[in-house]
Every structure is written in C-alpha cells, then in structure tokens.
Length: 237
Ligand SMILES: Nc1nc2c(c(=O)[nH]1)N[C@H]1C(S)=C(S)[C@@H](COP(=O)(O)O)O[C@H]1N2
Ligand SMILES: [Mo]
Image 1: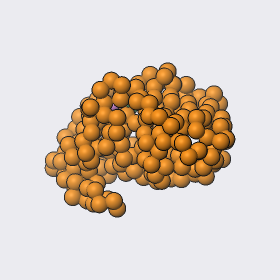
Image 2: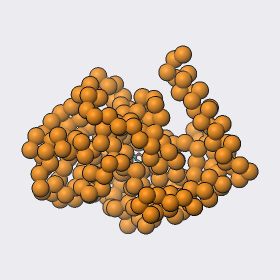
Image 3: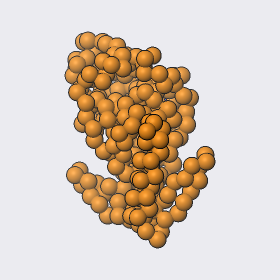
C-alpha cells in the first residue's frame, strides 16, 4: 500500500467512526472538494466533559468537526532533506537541527484537541514530535527568556509566553495521526500549541526564537488577540 492510500483508508475509517458517534445531528460540509462532518451531539458531549485543569473540554463558541481543516497559508518547502530548525535568542547553546537530528530527540506521541478561531474544533488529534520544553532544555534558555517566537516560511511568525511554551502539551511536531505531516498542515515540521487558538501553531517551522520582549506575530499585528486563549474567547483584540 502506498502512503497516500493508507492515509486515505485511515481517513475513511476515522470518518466512519466519527459518523457513528455523530448521531442524528450531523451535517456534512464540503470544503475545497473534500468533506467534513459537523456534529451537534459530539459538540454537546465535548462541552459536558471536563479537562484535568477543570476547564470544559470544548471552549465556548466552538463546534466539533470530524478532522483538521487545512486553513491555507504561504506553503514552505516540504522536503525533509532541506529542513533546518534554528534555535536562537535567549539561549546559552544556540543550535540548528536538521530533520534527522530532530527525529533523534526524545519523541512523544500525544493527542490534543485543536481549536480554530473560525469556530471549529477537532478532537483528539494524535501528534508526534518533540516537546518544546525539551528543545529549551537542550539549548539552555536563559533567565531572561520570557516569550517564544515561532518563525516560519515566508516570514510567518507567532508568539506565546514562555510559561505556555514550556507546557508538556506544546510540541514541535512531524507526524499527525501516525502519518508524515501533510503538506497543507505544515510539512515537514510545525509547532503545536493546543491551548491557544490554532493560528499560534506555526506551520512550515524554520526557527524558534526565545526572547526577553514580546513580538506580536503575523496575525497578532493584524487584529487577532495577542494571548488567544480559547476558553476566554480571546479572538480579536
Ligand atoms: N507558516 C504558517 N503557519 C500557520 C499559518 C500560516 O499562514 N503560515 N496559518 C495559521 C492559521 S491562521 C491557522 S488556523 C492554522 C491552520 O492550520 P491547519 O491548516 O493545519 O489547519 O495554522 C497556522 N499556522
Ligand atoms: Mo486561522
């Protein structure tokens, strides 16, 4: 089986599973020639669930869809052989990792929900990658590091405070749901910050800058909220 075929098969199986849980209140939406399912029942269920931090699983104003939707952006070079990740700024050991060096770092596989500011949420996406905290430890961030700026292809950036960046659920990810990162979702490597709206999760990641001062990113300079906490509905500023 080719990778594409396996991916398509997994997608069909996942859709079937989602359809079974979605119940009567399911609607099918077409987007760019593909299908997504929106489920009132799964939305209600996720709203009733409680996370370990006491928050409801589903942030206010969100509805559950069957899987990630590619949201576009200025696509970067997907070739892992060309990949370099520069780690710089407030670090004692600046470094540049190629794809193999990134893969050699302690790997975690964990599922996380994704909340897009356009009001869809995808539950339980399985991400594989390296914790940002692991990279911070290896680069030896200094006491002055207060913010993380993700830098991506064609000048896209996003910013998060250091306490958010060092949470164990924040990843530099290279696989989604057991498959290599698809091009539309940031191949070969993207950031994943599950507890912020998804625009903070820079795709086609090229560098990580630890800074003393905050540097509002691409969307933050265009009217989106600097903090972007979905549970406080920090959508626009
Ligand atoms: N490099 C880069 N990363 C990016 C973007 C972008 O335009 N360029 N868009 C952001 C926005 S607005 C969203 S909603 C998510 C979408 O990720 P997805 O396409 O995997 O769903 O990626 C974020 N990361
Ligand atoms: Mo977005």
